Image (cartoon, rainbow, N blue to C red; front, side, top):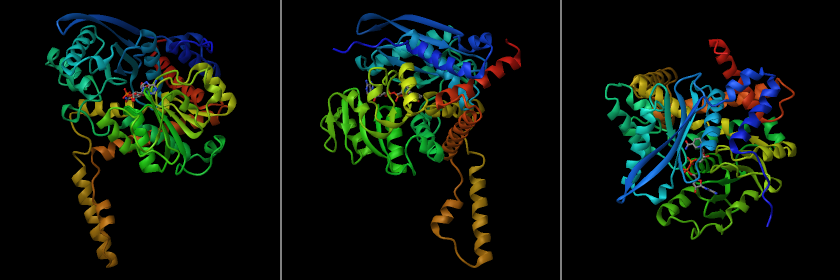
Length: 473
Ligand code: NAD
């Protein structure tokens, strides 16, 4: 049996990565400590009567920073959750928001639970009770702390939380903004469910627009035909796989789940696989790929792009030397340990870090929150006006040239942007601009050699400036 290599905890690993960036900036130690420390964390324990028996549940919510309000971050339901993980994830949210210019502080929450062991009604009771604890203790409101979905939670949990907040605060006109990632008919926004996977796609597209970066990763050309291995086929992994394969011509040669992996060097049809899982609830009998029981070994499969989209610490000192990818895009939070990150940097394997790569979720959450507090759907006011302008332009062109415009061009020009168009456009813009800022930071400082350090430097400079501007320090 191989001896486990001791590595820092997730929280310490994040802090070590941040320290690397702080040393590049040469930031005052006091300011650095203020930025790194977690502002507040609560642990709640509450009883719920399940099938006639009382069960006590434990949950946490950490507010890492409040230099911008509200603080923002998902709520995770997992049987392995703990306070250390919640604090690490809350810290990542602080840096992430600053990287993509989302004016929020960082927060995160978790409930120690295996959701697969409970019925829907039981999950509702537990979620409402957890929300009650967070609301009463000042850790959940539209203006101070706004959760979103994460591992093990989704739209339905967000709807229950919003409704619980509304019952307790009937006078709050902005109650629906107390969580994001809600169902559309409960104040959600088009494009939120797909947002993190979509953001991963936009980040990779932007990487491939920078031929120097592509060359550094020992690749050339466009995304079309590149091979890609994805770990995790939940919200983030599925959407990233779908968009990259259907829209960019990427070949998804392996999908890794907790129950094994599927491999097909010709590329896996993502929608077909998704339907198979919906119908059969397993991947072993999927007919169009080879099933590998030990999914973890498939992380080491040769590919152009490796996308870990499941859990933290998946690439660590045990397996990092066997990783055979040219580019790793961290769709999950913390999938590469601090030690493994240093090894990858030494080997010249490019890593697009989590705090940038998976920021699509919080970016569209920001759009949803704005929609909620402004009480109007994006596009509602200008859409028909844009259509009318398009029709007039087409008519003018036809009259001036005597030629008629094809149906395809007419439909394109005379279509006003709807909410989904605007959300995707805003997300694409955010991911492109953030990449360019990170790139610029790296170009301007020869001590910065990797994207993660550059992303943290970019982010910490903004946070430090905001602390110093208001004179907190
Ligand atoms: P999810 O619960 O929808 O999916 C998680 C997936 O990981 C599932 O397919 C599960 O089978 C798989 N998985 C679990 N253990 C695994 C293992 N050992 N090996 C392989 N696969 C395993 O969660 P999600 O929302 O897709 O989140 C995935 C990651 O992305 C997490 O790190 C989360 O923090 C991060 N993230 C999510 C969002 C979001 O909007 N949902 C936003 C930013 C970051």
